[in-house]
Length: 216
Ligand code: ADP
Ligand code: TYD
Image (cartoon, rainbow, N blue to C red; front, side, top):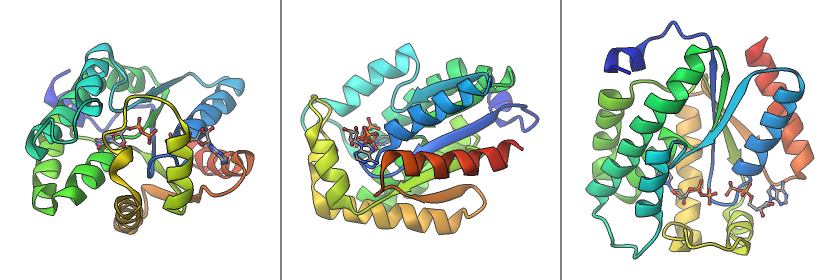
């Protein structure tokens, strides 16, 4: 894929992302939406970031495991963006070009928030790199919003070694939540805010309604 192809606006597929704080239920909702659309006969690709392609999954392990100061903030932005470029080239862009619905658990808004809020002076670097090497936004972003104490409780219940970000604590998650809500106000046409502090089935019904409106 050339940079030009990444910017092509004549693609037929629909690119949907889920965003929100750790433990808000993004993965659960992404899976449920994929099941619902598949049952309706839609061709789709369910994927996630960081990761989603073999090379990007290798970068995921580098960036999510190990000591909190393993990478400088600048290097971390480059790693997340490199992983995204590979994922876009090899998975997302081909699927969209083939007319599929792509559902991605986290995308560029996570970099804007996690890396851009940690070091506000680096937000411009995040946006500049995005324009340079990724070049497109999702068609629809579902922001799963909830009180961070609930999200953290859910996230910490899960086992696993990928804890570089989750162990950053409640204050951090509160800043993240506020940052995501600000982003939703900045991009009201792209980002829909969903109340995630409800039964998973109720959340999924809201998500399905919003997606059907876009697909119609
Ligand atoms: P995320 O991908 O945002 O980190 P997950 O979908 O992995 O969140 O959910 C985190 C944990 O919370 C999981 O154990 C999941 O089963 C549980 N969970 C997800 N959605 C809900 C919900 N609506 N109510 C209660 N528990 C939930
Ligand atoms: P993920 O596996 O989606 O975590 P969770 O299921 O807990 O929401 O993502 C792992 C972590 O990576 C998460 O804490 C957010 C962080 N992250 C960034 O810091 N920058 C990024 O660009 C992305 C995609 C994720």
